[in-house]
Length: 375
Image 1: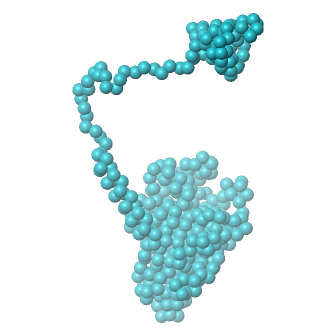
Image 2: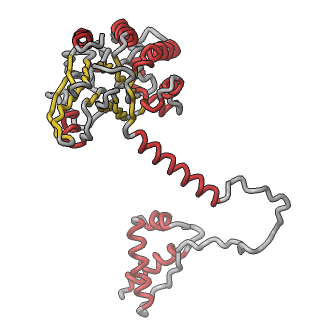
């Protein structure tokens, strides 16, 4: 090793070992005008030279030393007050969790299909109510309530509510839309409560929809569920999906499934997502209802079920909200060829008929019942 190299490493070791003036590797690097990485590399080299017998100083260890603590068992004080543990015993916790899980599983199984018994013979109709948005300034509120009153008064009509009963007013970009409304939050809930009271005697399925779900998530309470519970309709309400089997006195049954959203929407086919559901997830339903995307459409698909040919009706519902600033800004396609479609079930033949307009469907329903001697 040359004299110059010895001098270089001696200077490096002097600064490296002086933890008082240079407590960190960064300080050493600054003093030597090199990078911290180079300091570490030089330290490795100097240690190797020292171990091989070269005339270079030894380097100290700069590894952090672990703090020393008193042994756990060493007593410096005693605790005079020992409160009772507030946690329940783990055995009780385990029992509570298992009981809750089993109740949840039972509830889930029972709610997979709700049986409803129709209390009169002959044909009847089921109207699909689109996304409501009752508190939006662009909503056909008069039409929504007119439809509800007609359903309430007709003795042989039922209804499916597909969701979004009110606009959400918590999510940021929707809150900006909400400011255009002409009613307060309290007004909106009063309107929804009255609307549900009109429809309650005739509802067979009710979905909350994503707008209501956001409100529930932020507020912590499902107000809509409480409303349906108050009318004894808790079993036919759900945030996501309701399946009901309508049983007629003659033993014939018709099954409906209602979901606010389906996967796989298409810009070019309003019922594409529902069609995929029918082809992949169908479990014997006669009518499959959907909402959310504010466009409407219908498809009918033949399926085989228990040795019978069944015609499944997939119905995509639009929205009572027909003027939508957000949809206009985002260039969503307007496509609502119908607003409140209707199916007619004929238990005597097992037939299901679809009508784009509930008022035309009511005319046919009344005529059918008269022809069959039920009027």
